[in-house]
Each structure stands twice: as structure tokens, then as C-alpha cells.
Length: 198
Image (cartoon, rainbow, N blue to C red; front, side, top):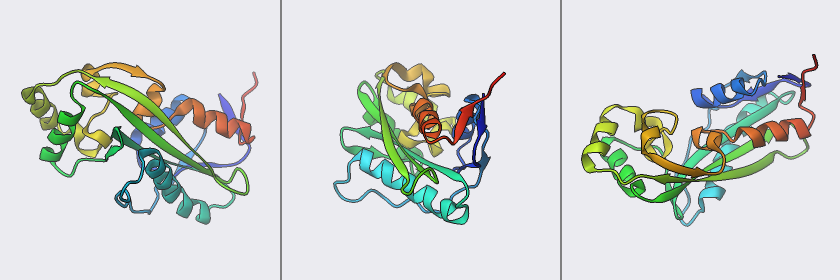
């Protein structure tokens, strides 16, 4: 759907982010970020942490490829101001899902796009997600599938946990891992992509 005016690099190993950019018809290549992911600072808000991690992921790839527009992203699940990252083990995944059970939480994705202007464009998108009340048996069965283990908040809305979600308010693609409309608009507004003609 789009042609690029400069190379676009996704600084992420996430297959979900790759799939979303593919769906949008944006040509890009993938160069995984070497950046580590430190824990949130004491009192750091979910949006601030997600934005900081997105910048941290994109920056080293942008330094190596100054000719490109480099996209970094990081998603966190938040219950109030409590940040839930990826679970350490099955017990941690069960703990997180217990926190999410029967309540509304937020999925916050930070995005950093380097190479569009003199400073990176950094923004966050938040989506409210309502989850059904889950029994301990249902939580244990889901964790046993292995799906939660590399997911923020220990669930994948595009996977088996779709049956747990009763409502969302905001961007669905944000919950999957990349707020697609906002990323495409940022690339378009900077002239990095233009709609394909004919």
C-alpha cells in the first residue's frame, strides 16, 4: 500500500510487530536491538517506562543506520500504576493473570521513531482492556500452554487469551504490540512513506 522515501528498520524481534507492519503494507527490514531491558525505576509511570524502553531499543540501531527511519517499541501491561512485564516463570504468570482477572487494565505501548527529524519522535498509546473473572483452574490451564511466557502481562489477546477479554477501549493493534494507525500516521507525516498510486 505504501512506497518508502527512505529505508525503514524495525528494531524488534517481535513476530507480532512484524506481522502488523506487513498488514499495513509498509516495506521494512528487521534488525534486532542489542539493548537490554532494565526494570522500571521506582515510581516510574507505565507510559514513561514504555517510552524510555522504546527509545532505548531504537537508539543503537539508529546509530548504526543513520540513513534509515528506525522504529523501536515496547509494550507494558499496567494495573493502575503497577507495571507488569513478561513473567519470570509459570508461577509469576499465574500471579499476573490473577491480578488481571475480573478487572480492567491498560496496555501501554511506547514508540520511538528515529531518523525522521533532528530528534526522535516518541509517543505512547494506551488501550483499556477488560478481562473476565478467571478461575485458578482456567489460569493454570492457560499458563500450561506456554503462551504467556514471553508476553507482557502474561497473555496474548491474539492467541488463546482472546476468550478471556470481554471488551477493549482503544487500539486493538496496540494490545497486540504496535499501535499501527499511529505509527503509520507518524511515518506518513514525516514523508517516510507515501501511498502507492495505481
